[in-house]
Length: 237
Image 1 (cartoon, one colour):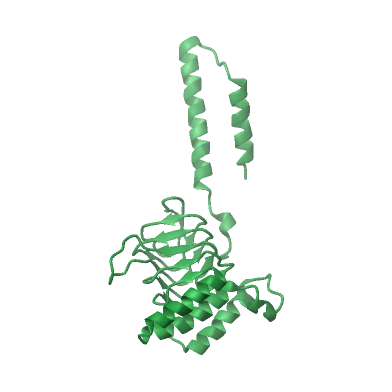
Image 2 (cartoon, helix red, strand yellow; image 1 turned 90 degrees about the horizontal axis):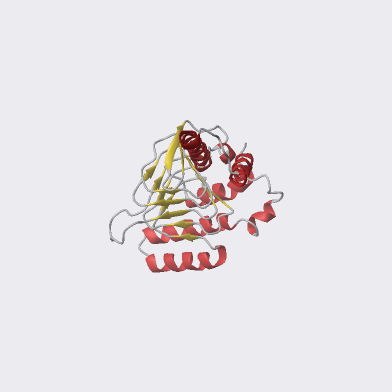
């Protein structure tokens, strides 16, 4: 992560909604509608105090910030430049987390730990230009590479290499090479839907084989057939 003065960081923090949110119509809105920006501003000051040994004061600042913004950022964590917390309610960033530059984080994201050991790195490292979808949980001392996409509500517990898309519980890598549009979460494949379609079709084939072996007919349960067709219609793209 490149270095810059705290005032330069604050200027960049305030510029991110202007660059990334088409809903912003006036700079005045920054003061009333962007809690993620204010959480970052409070963090910048608290972090500066924390590294100078004023840890209790730093924690107090972030405690007040949490009450106001509903965003929990530990002052000891490391957050890079041009990070944008979009909507941001419910975001949690743990003590030893490291967030790179140009990272986009949506609401409800947790960068959490999986143990209670003190003095060790317990939280994830997020590479530059990564996008983390709403509700995603990234847990433990793992590394998310650069230019990655983490799907909404995914739970990531293992390292993710650069230029990857990961989804699911637990998250699995589904493709390499990210879409040029960082907001294109609608293009992330629905692996649960694909699995259900496969299972339905597989069960259908097995039922037909069993029916043919028993009586040589192809009797169908009308009600189940209707449910099956309705499901397939509901998941069509």
